Length: 212
Image (cartoon, rainbow, N blue to C red):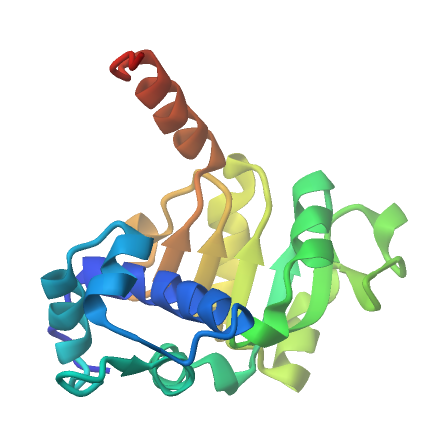
């Protein structure tokens, strides 16, 4: 991937992919940047600028072929890679993530779940086995997962991440509040702070302008 792609553009790529999928389900075969901008709450020029980072798509006077553009964006994201990912933490959050996300449609394959609670070992969540965390080094050696999902307490963040990093995992989907890049600056990290999102909603409700 080009190193000069703005982060905000990268953040918008999954949104484009999702909206284009919705258009396909509605039977829409092509769409102009103006129509797409109205649906997404962006400007047409912003959409064109975003896509131009990857070579540009569409034809003037025709717009975008929805199916082709979605496939192109999927390739840019890497949807077809099927990276092996493990999940650490089989508590309520970890179970919800394992049960309700379709990893295969988002570029990943969930190959194992780990937890430090021996009582959970052997349990299956959507056909994926929960293993004791003490076995993680051997599992990683045999299966070489690319990424890890962390659904663990913040206090366990550094210890668990260090173990995973030493096993060769350098990419993390991090639901804990532990700041991975402070100790592992070369890691690829996507932080998910549900409480932050909820507080942003609270702020927006508190500060909204009343409308008749």
